[in-house]
Image (cartoon, rainbow, N blue to C red; front, side, top):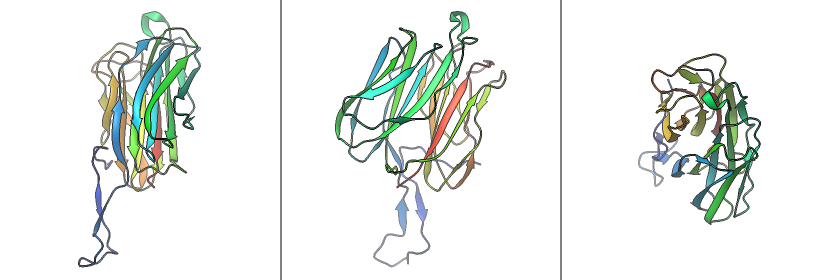
Length: 242
């Protein structure tokens, strides 16, 4: 069973090494917390931009989703942060409903090394097809070595339940998972133990997270009720607490 709490809250754990009457508090808060979410919804545009007022030492996760193939998507910002990414996941033009387009998704991440208002822009090469960007800001992530594990999945068959291979996390990691589809629309459901932090029901998709104990976890979710298709994809990472 996945143990998680809402990412916006601290989780407290007992430290048996601390005596009850010592000057040190017996409980210490979990290091990772969710600071902010930006989720404006997709646009039919060559670029989409989200603005984040980042705090030095925090950590940003950008989730890009799109509906076109072939399509190369890049990310840049106005503060010059050092962005890195997981591999882009995509299904070619067999998906996309009546448009005959595709399903694409990618997770990017960067430590906040400069405080202040930052404009984060995702750019695609395929004209003005639907393109969206979610941005999460976390406090407490190990900025020098943030990635504990990653996972990804392209739909192997038609289903309502969506999933990825299990990944291994350490105590107080936060698992961040993006599922995207381009068939129909509606509200997706988070997997057991996960919290939806952003969603765009017009695609549909969701970005979910969970703070976990050490162990192996399988990111899951569900498409909107009644929707069964093979046009979904998922990408996820476990981020290490400092």
